[in-house]
Length: 466
Image (tube, rainbow, N blue to C red; front, side, top):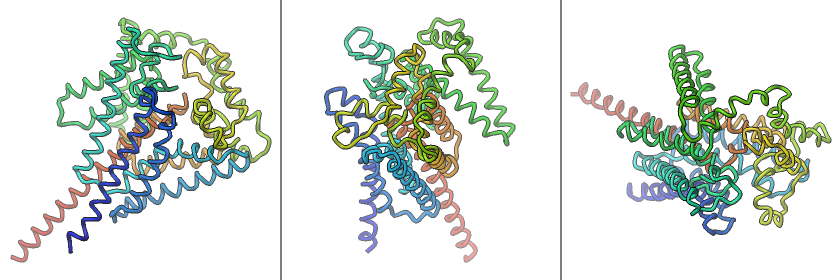
């Protein structure tokens, strides 16, 4: 009787974990598979597998943990609310149905994957399996990026329309922000490994971290380092109630910045010269400087097309402004999406005109008028932006209970102020898995403590009876 009862639970559980891993893999590897000749629709597969993995996980999970259930319902409710805002925006602005689906999935997909991981009870073996897949995928990405450098220098590997540095993109090969995404994933996972793999030699963990840093230098992904440092500074502000911890963060940040500045000024290392050049061009950063004017051009374009007070609430429609969907996705996959009823807006084209006419925007995506936060606001208005921030608040307050998880969230926030990298599935789903792993590790530790307490209580009861 007991075997019959437990057997279906085990079968469903394994299926849920396998689906989660498969969904992650279909978002992490399709770029390089597509570059090797696979059809472009392979890049859309994860949009179907992630919600399917979540559906299976939610409907078949055997968990009765009240905390897991409460968090799951809160995330589901917020996602549905965001979907409702997106539909309202699409109806107001006559956006296509495919716009709604893709816009929703690009922004909410990482929350769906986190939810799928959170709502299933992981054993230690299953936790290790999920972690191994993440670490293995990230290591492959790093090694591929390091191999691409000599191959590109020797002319053995195509760089397409990219510069040789920008084409070092790991498994995100030949995609718009592939170099930044690849480097961000490498650094995030290297930090995770450095902080968590305590049983592994410190030299191995440091070596992985140095490898990720070297990838940043050879791929000219300087903004990734800036983002992680800014995220680190923002994290220190959240420790204001803990003087000892904020002092520790402050000292570490100052030492790092002083060391990096010295290296930039005194060492002849590939990639550091670019940092020095941008730091010294102070004339472009003033209120009337070209950097500010170029960066805010997207906001001016969006406001020029407001026709109703409702646009302030609901924007111009999903994919109708400077989000990843409107700015990049439709441009790259228009031949596939146009027959499905995709709709566009002049704002996207005009934003590209601004980029192509600005030496600054063409020199660095740091100054691009297309970036995620203005894209979400432009597409969905203040109402959509508010609900999306509420989703982030749930993630921050309910799941991200450790400094590393919160650092990842803050870096994604900062990435959203620079470019549309926050909306890149390969990066956002990697962050989702990392946060899910951190949460599950705490759950496993908590359950182990509870079992230990129960054993001690049972032992004490037995002694009292004796």
